[in-house]
Image (tube, rainbow, N blue to C red):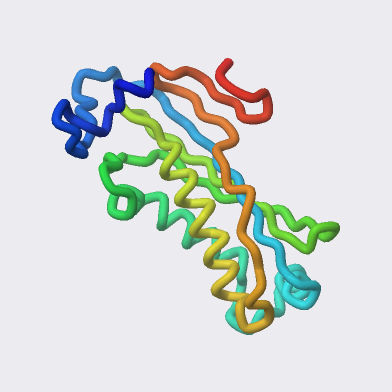
Length: 165
């Protein structure tokens, strides 16, 4: 799509929700990635499960899943979607004192789920921050990006390979 043909604006330059009624229903999936780095004390508490607020990764997983389902309420002009799968995975990265998060979202519909995956991973990381902030207020969220998406007319995108395949 050219820069002169932005789909979220009408001919007068007003913001609009894109009309997707003529698009075919296809299977769509997206995975987003993010990292939260923290001090040694916070990382040890997450790793050992001793954070006073409870099961950090369990709560963060539920928060991320809940956020994906509310993406259209948070992101202007985003279509509400009937999600068929949401998964949040975490991996502890001791060498970085960090938690890596991946959010994978699926639907069969007329528009993609990239925003849902990005919202889910961001909210999961924010939840980790919230649960650990008493130990480390200097945590840093980063590296939030789309890893892969399938379905739709734009095709299959894989970030690791630098673009569309």
